Amino acid sequence: MKKKSRAKQMTDSVYLNNYNRLKHLALDRFEWDNLPTGLEARHIELALFHHGKAIFVQDDVLGFLCLPCNPNGGMNVYGDWVKYTAFGYNYNKVFDVEDCVLIRNNLLMINTDDYIQMYAKRLTDVERTIDVNLASQKTPYLIACDDKDILTLKNIYKKIDEGEPAIFADKNLNLSSINVYPTLAPYVIDKLTDFKNAIMNETLTFLGINNANTDKRERLNADEVNANNEHIIENLEHMLVQRQLACELINKRWGLNISVKIKESVVEEDGELYSDFETDCRE
Image (cartoon, rainbow, N blue to C red; front, side):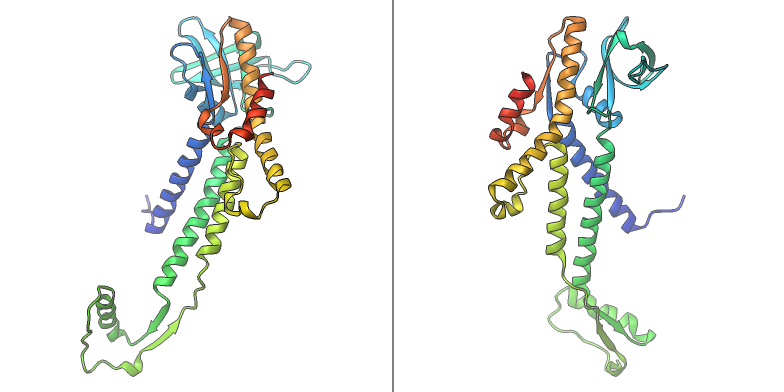
């Protein structure tokens, strides 16, 4: 197997860091209460994150489960599947729609993972470009010289980099054969950082996490802030409402008392933004 270059290893590392950071935010938005013993919120959210849908079932042996699923069988007159195959580690079982409750990540059952991968890739591209631009500021010159002088010049600049107070060179060093050319690499880190912040704000808006475009809040008027808030709420509503609907069906089917709400850590970012919305969803 061909060994990865150092640059490719760094890019992969930055991407993985961005992906995991965004994935954590995506998984940590909703709080599930009164789940059956053995079933945790992360089991539900991971299934919805990766697959866009999951089914809540009562297994004859394992009890209550919430697992990723695939459609199985035909459709009814509305185009809804009449059977689902639930799958997990060493588990694969078909359930009729009457014997399970489908939990949708959103109305279209689209997973969140694809979007997080896209945003992580964008952030990585910008951050690696910043790295390249920063490196170009450290080496703003291209030096042309005879082959026999290359090692000598490398040693000279190594001493400069190490902070030597004086540089000693062979008197036979032909300085007239050395040509220095500026690379003229522009400094664009500030612009790239603004672009990175814009991508992050877009990601948070998609996830329904308030960001209020904080880097330019002072330049926004009230209408612009309200429009941004509405967009954040709409994105969160797509996901929260489907989860709450599933809770109602589960509770009715098995006599449980499961509920889901926006997590306090999300609400605390701007309690006023979410307060009315959360009340509306519960009504």
